[in-house]
Length: 317
Length: 314
Picture 1 (cartoon, chains in turn red, purple):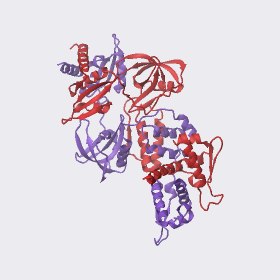
Picture 2 (cartoon, chains in turn green, blue):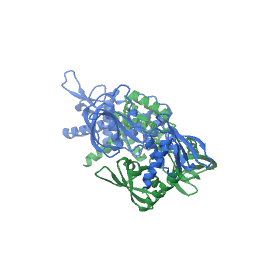
Picture 3 (cartoon, rainbow over the protein chains, first blue to last red):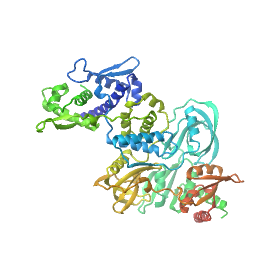
Picture 4 (cartoon, rainbow over the protein chains, first blue to last red):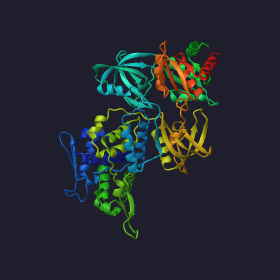
């Protein structure tokens, strides 16, 4: 139904205009560039829609009744005669809830510098729009001890050396990195950076950084992706680990990236866990004990067995 | 004519007009609904009304006279315009950052854009490179449905699978939603079990189905109180004392809430203490460190680890 599809985009464009026009009325001289970035709309599209606004106005369309839209050669926009569009449409209930939900996800992250401001903003929003008291954030854990120092390095684009304890390999070493972004996901802070020694992109977890040494070198960002990036990317060299997870260990299939999850009648699941290294999977198996079983590869079984022996030796048992 | 132009004119007209306007009057004023074909103009108007309502424009039909003979359309200004909310620059910046976080586009973005009109956009754009969080493990429409249900005290039905894999159908009076450790939970009164329970929304096996009116949460209710705390959350005074290799110590300090480095032993290991009430759970967590961790105290925890290692070696 082409008619329907067209009306959907018209609705979107209308929604956008009812929000952008009040902003432009309040901020004469805003450039198309700025407005397009702020409101997430293509510049050409915005220009076209503003031209339409120019043609609209209130009947009987006398010369003084038309909305006046002016875009100068620098792209600066001025809108006059649009009093009825000088304030935006209020938020729908869904929008207000969605803002609250998003803000709550951020607020649950320990160490967020914007948290106090965000809390105040949500309070104001709730008071004004009658938002929800039914949405809560539960902050768990503490902020990583060196979070502020890492944030400073990102902002100053400064090359640093970090004392880092990798969970996958179990190694702890000093690395020279160029940190490009810092973002939180599911309660942890991540640091996408260029590892100078490895000459490759790496994502570090801020709470595993045990020390920082500053250098006096700055760097040009390579545009590494920040928030929203997948935290695990599969690669060709991954080993396909197949596990049988009994009910108490089913959380593994939820917590890690798994594929080919097959449910068994007794409540167990079989799942494939692609992983770059086997070391951490062996340690995970030690933790799960009899709640899990390695189906493949066989080499992982050997690794688990040797890990058990080494650990027993520590305890002298 | 571009339909957007028609819609902008209609909104402007009804916002400016002091009295409700009948379709006939609208048709006389706006050329877009004019023409000879009344039926087609009406259909166009009906479609436009739907579009406006879809975007939350409060277009209503009211009587134009006390006898209710004739009806007209109006957009009440007090319902249309966003109330003045005075955000400070850091507050609006925080909201802007929040709306842009996450991995999928939601109504939050559109909502926050409406709030920008009183703020300096240049400042916002300058801050846009700042830190953001990347959402949760649950689709936002399901979170919104749960929040909506809790907010309006609705009763909801849904399929659920526990962490252990047991499946059931739940019948719950929604009381609140809480975000904890990267997961959204719906907390409410489970009618069948007769008590307050928490449900991780990512474990729902169906959408939430509205089942009518629910009930009001008890006095002083806090959803967060009902979401199970991990074994590493301090409860009671007992502390475990564990020697970690330097590499493992960094990870342990990050994982065990309330962990403190007591000393560095002669062999280079860090001796760390942390609250441990649930011995079985802490033993599991520590086994993941393999030979990089050794429990020094309490005796019971050490024995538990040794017992499990022996079982694994059998």
